[in-house]
Length: 71
View 1 (cartoon, rainbow, N blue to C red):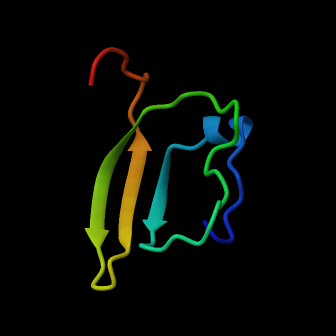
View 2: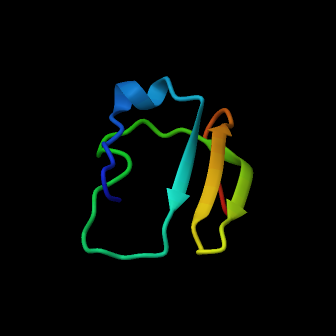
View 3: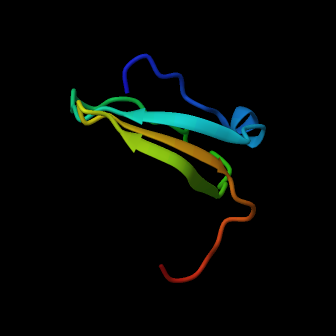
């Protein structure tokens, strides 16, 4: 994830929604989107699209408590 800052726990707690662009490329080890020790949070997909170049653009919004149990 080029040019991506890690989202640490205090910042993540205040996030209500975020847009994520996923490019179909692997460049190596990369950086983690969320730092180790991040507090679990549930998000739901509210909008998504795929560009003609294969880039996936997804909007996630907070979805309350993290569900537990089987998938």
